[in-house]
Image (tube, rainbow, N blue to C red; front, side, top):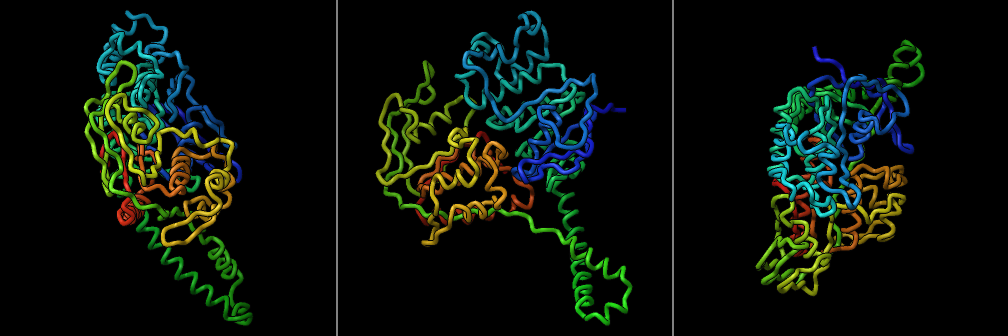
Length: 477
C-alpha cells in the first residue's frame, strides 16, 4: 500500500479581501501523478507553494511525512550572475560521484545533449529562457526525491524538451509528481489524477486532461439538470410567497423557511473576462525588411544571411530549439538588439508592441488599476467608443476588489494578461508575442470561448491590416 507523503486538512488562504483557498483538504501519496488545472489567479500556484512548504496557510494544517524528500520547481528561473550550469546542477559533488551515476548521465544527455565541460561551465546568465528551465529541471531530477512539485515546467521548453521530460517521468514510476501546466498533451502523458482549483475549492478527477474534460462535461450536464430543476422550484416557491399573507399563514412555517433558504443559496455569477477591439493605426506597404542580416551573441552566430520581408496582414510563427536564437530575433525586430551585419528596415507607419517573457515593466508595488491608469485614464476602442481604465479592468476580469490588488499578489497568468492589456492600450499595429502560450491557462469552457474570441479578434486585426508575429516552442492543438 502506498504511503502518504503530504496531507492538507481544511487549509484556507486569503490575499487581501480575496479568498484563494477555502477549507481545502487533500493528500499526495507515493508514486501518485497529479495534474493541477484552473483559472488564472484561481490559486494553483498558492496551493503548490503551501504543499512545498514555502508558504503557510491562514487556517488549517499541513502534515508531511518526516522521511519524505520533496523538491519544488517554481515559475521563476534565476541565479547569481557568476553561477554556472555546473554549480546549479552538480553543486559540490566530485566528478567521479556524478559521472559514474547512469541516471545523472541520462538526465544530462536528455536535457543538454551531453555533460562536457563546454556545457557545464557555461555561465547561467548566458542561457536562453528554455536552457535556464532545463537547468532547474535537471537540478531536481538528479536528486533522490520522493515527490517533485513542478509549477509550469514546460514553460520555454521546445517540443523535444517537453517530450523528453514526459518520457523520463513515465519511466520513474516510483516518483510522485504534482504538476501545474498549460500543456494538455503533457498532462495526458503523465497524470493519473487531475485537481481543478476553482472557487477556492479543489475538485478531483480521475485521469489526465482528456479524462478531466469529459468528466467535467458530464458534471456540468448533471449540474445543468439540477439547476433547471432548482430554478423551476424557485419559480413555484416565489409564486407561492407572492400569494399574500392568508395563503402563507395556511402553510407550514418550514416551507417558508425552505423557500427563503432556496432563494438565498442561489449562486453568484462568475467573473468573466472579455477580449476587446482596441483602436489601431493602418500600416503602410512595409513592416520589416531584412537583407543579408546576421545575429551574433558573443562569439556565437545565431542567424546568418537572413533575407526576410514581413508584409501587412502576415501572421508568422517562429519556432526552434532552445537557444537557437528565437528570442534574440524577436528583440532585434523590436529594436532592442542590433543585427551585427546586413540591412534592417522598419516601416515608417509601424507602431509595434513587444510582449516579452519577463515582467520587469510591472512594478510589484502597483495596484492593478494603477498599472492601467499609468498608460491612460481612458482608452479608445474600435468604432470610436471609449472606456475608463476602471471599466477596462472590469471587462478584462478584474472586478473592483481585483483592481485594488497589488501586482506582486497576482498569479503569473494574471500578470501576463495585465501586461498584454497595457501594450494594447497604446494602439499598436504590429504585435510581437514572445511565448504567447504563457499568457494564460484556462479551463475547458474558457478555452472554447477564448478560441471563438481569438477568431473574432483576428478578423478585426485583418481589417486593420495589423501584423502579428508569434514566437512559440511548439504548436498547440
